Structures are given as C-alpha cells and as structure tokens.
Image (cartoon, rainbow, N blue to C red; front, side):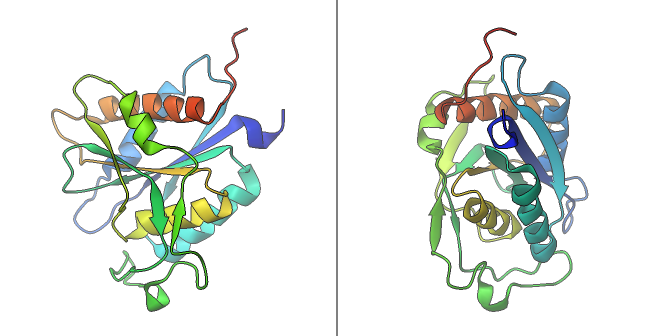
Length: 204
C-alpha cells in the first residue's frame, strides 16, 4: 500500500496573543495518544504549526510533498466558540490580521491568481449528522475566519486537491477538557475517512 493511501496528518497550532496554551494542540496531543482506532488501516502523524503565515505555509507544503497523506486535518481554536465547527472551505482573500511575528500576507491574499474559494472533498454537513460524543455540539461552517487557520487550510486544500479539513474547537474549559476534545477529534476523523471511502482492515 502506498503512503498516500494510509497516512493521515493532523495538525494543531501553537500559542498566540494571550493564548499561551492553544486548545487545538492540546486536543491533537490527546488524539495522538488515542490513535484513530484499531480498525482504521491508517497511520496517524501529528504536527504543531506556528501561528505564523509564512512558516505555516512552508510546513503545509512539506506535509503534502513528504507525507502525501490521504487526508490532512488542521485543528484550530475559535476563541469565541461554544461548539465545534467543521469548515467546508478555505478562502483566498481577506487576510488582514497580523500573525505572531507581526506579518500580514501581501494584499491579504494566500495564493495570487488562485481560486477565491477551495472546497474540501469531505461533506462537513454530512459528517455533522453522524457525530455524537457526550454533549459536544458539532456543526458546519463556510467561513473559517481569515486568520492563519484559514490561510493554512486554503494552502492544504490547494496542495491536496481538496483532501483536507479544518476543525475549529473552543478553548479548553471544565466542561470541555483536552481529553474529551481528543476523543471528539478521533470520532470526527474516523467519520471523515469513512465518508471518503477509506477501507477498514477487518482482519485486525
């Protein structure tokens, strides 16, 4: 089996602004401990991305060149969210906010000449209907917010021909600890792979 058919890369983001602990990376670390489930015929790789447009772009490019995953899932924090959002698409324009190094993309654009919107091959609406983990609400969105998460997502969709996903999660809280977020990520990614027609290894 070639690497493209059995590797899933999941990324979280590092600290930014006043958020010294980024719930996205804490959740991805928990997912790394859990794995994707014993009946999933996939290798899970995890990676932290900095909240830095240029560095995130370089690392996304490297993920697709080196790992050639069947799916890249990027997890970011939405500091005002109370629910988990599955982002259907990445946007090319409108990046005005500075990253942790004070940098803004020239003209607010990800990819000069690229399409305004790139859609994921995964139907986030369909995924939401099948997710039930405790009382965690999961919904879909078509606007990922024009910051480094959305920027990285657009590049990943571009490099991976739509085989990418972005999940926005709330900050950590007493009712939503990292352990529960990790479990929710596991269920969501399993569902995404199912939706994409990933083969399960029934012999294991």
